[in-house]
Length: 68
Image (cartoon, rainbow, N blue to C red):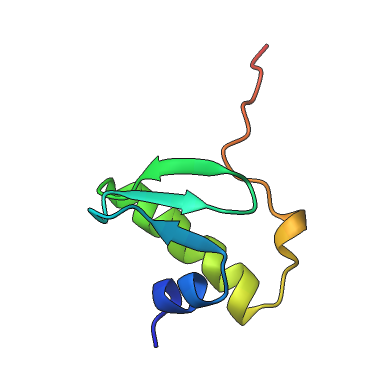
């Protein structure tokens, strides 16, 4: 089973009916999965949680950064 399927089974992510948008359930974020960067981010997130055991609560994605 690949990381995406494991993430769905564990309730970490889900997809819409068209497999176009990915939902990060813990962060309540929706992103366009057709974007290649998003596919890398999803795989990295799932690898941190499933393979390396990072707590999902300690991972923050898509945080705005103030410059200057």
